[in-house]
Image (tube, rainbow, N blue to C red; front, side, top):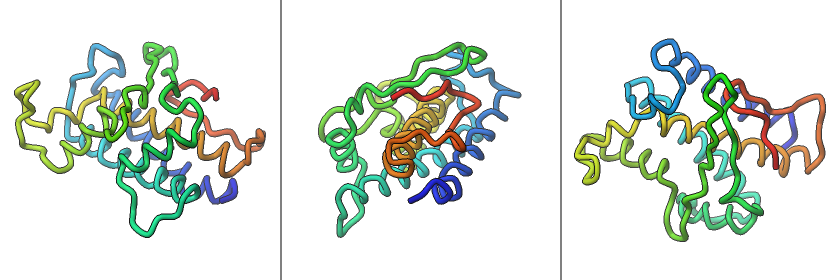
Length: 188
C-alpha cells in the first residue's frame, strides 16, 4: 500500500471518527473526571472505532502472515507482539487542552487475552444488556468516554505504525504526516 491508498482507505476515515469524537465535547469535556460518562453517541463511536481497529490490524497481520481464515483479536495480538518491537509499551498522550492524559492502550495485554477496552467493546457489541459482575451495571455503560478515548488512541497509534512500516517503508515522508487534533505527535 502506498501513501495515497493509506490516506484514501484509512486516514480519511480516522479523521472522520476523530471529528465525531471531538464533536462530543460540546456535551462532555474530554477529561478524566468524565471517564464514566456514557451515551448513545459514545456507543456508536466505540463500535465504529473498534471496527476500524479490527480492519487495520487484519490488514497488517495479513501482510505478515496470510491466513486462510480471518484471525480473531487474540491471534492478531500474538502477531502484533511478535512483530512490533515494544508493542505493549506504545503510548500516546492527549494534547494539553485535554488534560495531557498518557494512554498505553496495549499495556495490559496478556497472552491468549485481549485488552480491557477490547473486552468492553465485545461486551457492548454482543451482550449490551447483561449485567457486569464487577460494576453491577449493564454492559451498555462500558460505552463511555474512557473506553472511546482509549480505543481512538489505539487506532491512532496503530495507523501511525502501519503507515511508517507498510506505506512509507520507515522513511519520513514530509508531504504527509499523520497528525491528530486530540493526540500529540506519535513517537516511535
